[in-house]
Length: 171
Image (cartoon, rainbow, N blue to C red; front, side, top):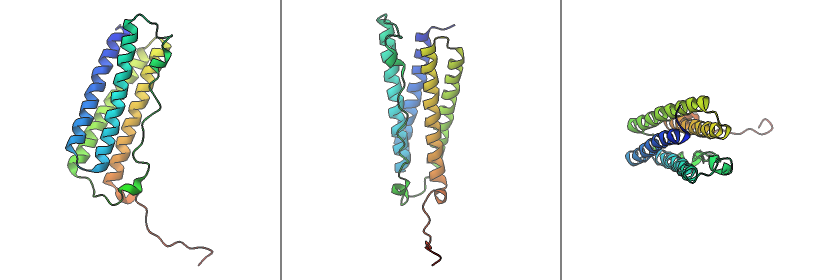
């Protein structure tokens, strides 16, 4: 069985790989919504990396993670850039290349949350288990954001407001 520090190092490598992938994707796509989503997700991964570094630093000092419980709390979730879709209604459709980047990042994100699910199953300490579970949860949020972005860009007719006549009192 691996130590918590070894597992955290493994998680750190995978998070850094995802962060780099999001930054690369942001540089390769031109659609403003894709760029925004990849930027948001890269920042999320950066926050998780910082948290892991804090935890490892605390562990090296010999502090119990029960005392530093706040270190093991992942956060409040992902800020969703898709809240005002009307801002994007005049933008062009995305390209096949941008859809490919969305697909690739979704696939990597899905692999990461399955990886975290396995860590949750093997964790014995409640706080460690909670931390792994919250990372898996956050990763699912990233996956869903990518999926929603892909749906919005590939099928704008499903989310753009239709202009329809409004009838009041049967008029």
